[in-house]
Length: 406
Image (cartoon, rainbow, N blue to C red; front, side):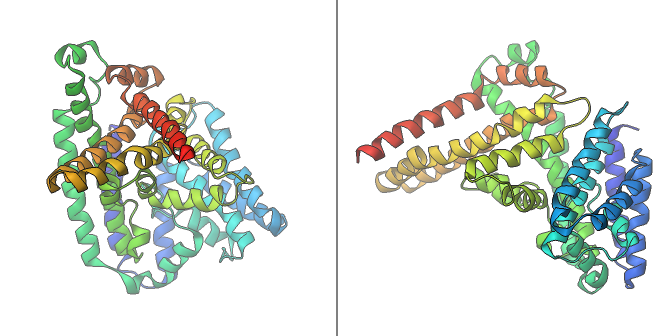
């Protein structure tokens, strides 16, 4: 069975099991129904170490002083991740995806303990949270307190209509994904045949825009299925959802788009890394966030393509803000004042398409096989993203000079 087929099968079973848990009212039964399939998934994808690591972390957090719990859990979680990557066979595919969620859960437990947040009262509760099937396979990440609230009170807050709406959205995204995957595959980008078939750069960029949309649609589909399971689990909408599609596709700035993508991981990074990093400058803390995110996504052997994407993101955010201040807003203001009403709307739409594509362009690093493939695809697209960053830098410098002169 191909890994993608296995992914879809487990995703469907996740939804069905979420419907089963929705019928259970007693917390003991609900917790057991969460941990059993989670443990099965870990065994199925060769994460046999997961229960033992979770139990070891429980012992560690009770052995160290509460003030030292954050650094202990962080070092333990990422240390285990490093050891598994260096081990023969390493972590890859779906097994790596499952361990990413385990890493988030384990790393955060010490911080929540130090903050005085509700924590596990027994090793069973601790291991049951770590291995809980909900969110283990395809997000969202839940804190221990959020997970326990769903265990104890979720039965009374089941949202069948919300689950049905999420499933309908997932079906629409799946159809769009299938159409784009068949009509505009990503693999040909960067090949000699691709350049011969589409000699004009504009045509290649349009092809890439449509082709890269399938990556987002695939995640939208998976996350909406997970959201449906979360609604049945009893989670509120803001915790069950992993993305805000409207903001990603039509947001007014790059920062909003980044925060709207995989929202639960964004909250984890903001809480555990950004707010607690011992750095004064906001840009340094932001760089630290994306460096941690790149390391967290990485697999064995080391994939430079992840770092190529994440270390570009801080510069993309700065570039977007610079272009908005120096170019977009003055241009739109001028068009609203002097041009017909529709012209400003068209310009606003083009800006949105451009910013979405720049992120999709760098996101090629996620879908390519290796860094050489990434560079070949970027070259075929005329280094569009890098030119966009250079233009933003020039706009920032020129705009800064004008402000100083004024």
